[in-house]
Length: 225
Image (cartoon, rainbow, N blue to C red; front, side, top):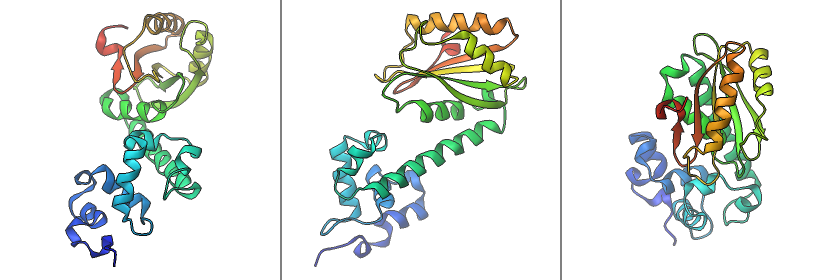
């Protein structure tokens, strides 16, 4: 008879381990096993999770996979894909609520985490703005431009128009580098200067420009603003 997770000692079962020791005590495979809930014939949920992580090349590519790729793997399907997208969206909304509650500059880790969750998985560049009031509280987040981020694809007048529409006093820019390399390019620096000059005409401050890759690089921290 095949051994199932229910046959394991209680302290080794992923769900019980999470409840007893916290989610950060679990491995990627154990966390994924809780999401999967069940394995397949002769394969426990933990073993299936390990197989999937090996096939995808890790947790990140699994979470960022498209529907067709995701559903082509053993133990997965459209219902699981919908469930995964819902979980990820709830996480993004939770992060947004965190940064809405106070000064965005006083919780930089939450701000970075939110921008990363919103932009990191795109296969193309996306330029976004976080609009803030005069106390640096978040008013809105807008994904404004898609494609290569350069002077031809980011329009300062559109950013100015949106800032006025939101009654923003300040803005934080963000865009992703699909390559994963977050080092700002000369084009990134050039468009940031153009946007900063345009927004200064309507008294809107540019607080930062964050480049999202495998890490997050801040223009403000680099002294590039």
